Length: 368
Ligand SMILES: *Cc1c(COP(=O)(O)O)cnc(C)c1O
Image (tube, rainbow, N blue to C red):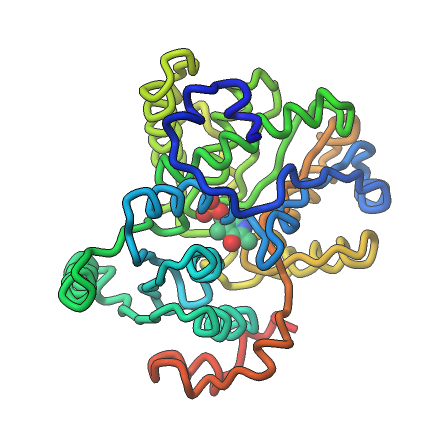
C-alpha cells in the first residue's frame, strides 16, 4: 500500500488512484561520485526505475491523474508539453495501458535526440499529436486551440477528453510526490539512507518539488528541497511553487481533516536559478560535465534538459564545501532508456508533417 494511504486511510478511500509503477524506488549510495566531488554522504533516489515500460517522475503523478480519468469513465485524455515532453510520452504509454487514448498538444522546442525518441514513441503508443505554435502561447490563444480539439473529440466520440495539465502538475498530480515524501520517510526508518539534509531535484512545472516539499514536511522530515530551475522564471518561480504546495495541501486536508495544514509563502521556497543556461531544453556545458562525471564514476545515465542541470547545481554547491558533511540526496527524475528496438523501426514520415523538422534538422551541438 502507498505509504501516504497507510498513514491516512481516509485518503485511500477518497482518492481515485491506479497503480502503474514500481514503488518504492531504490535509494543508493553514490560513494565514487561523492568522493570525487567531496560529498561524503551522497545518495541517489532512483525514480528512473519507477516504471517497467517507462520510468521517471511522471509515473507517480499519473497514478492519480489517470486514476481520476478512469473513475470519470473518460475514454481520452488531453495533455500538453514541449515536442519532446517526457510527460506527454509517459501519459501516452500509461493511458494506452489503461485503454485510454491520448491527445498531446505540443509546443516547439530546441532539438535533441530525445525529442525524436519521444515523438516516435508517443506515435507508437497511438497518441494523437498536435503542434500548436508559440504565437498561440504568447498571445494567450492556447485556450482556443484546446477548445477546438475538445469540441472535435466531443463530436467524434460523444465525450470530452479529460484535461491533464502541463507536466501533470495539478494538485492531484502533485499528490504522487507527497506520497514520495512518505516513501522516503519509510526508507529512512528502515535505515536504507540517513535522513537527508538536502534533496536536489530538477524543477519545471514544479509538481515534483512542490509535492515533495509538502510530503516531507507532513512526514516530519527536516530535509530541505533544492529545486533546480530548468524552465523560464516566469513559469518556474517561488510564487507559483508556494501556490501549488498550498493548493495541494488544501486538497489533501479537505479529503482527510487529520492531514496537517501548513501555509507556504514564497520566501519559504529556495529555488536554485543559476543552472538554467540559455533556455528550456538547451543543454549547458556544466550540465554535460555533470552527466559525464555521473557516468564515469557510477555508470548511471542522466540527460541534458533536467537531471544534468540539477546535478550541476549539486556539484557546484559541493565545491563550496557546504555539502562535505551533509547527507545529500540527488532525486533522479529521468529515464534515459533508448527504446532502440521500437524507434529503430519507427518512421518519422508517419508523424504529422509539423514534426518532421526534428528529424531532418540537426540536434543542438552539445547533444552527443
Ligand atoms: C518533467 C520532468 C522534470 C520536472 O518535473 P516537474 O514536476 O515538471 O517540475 C524533471 N525531470 C524530468 C526528466 C522530467 O521529465
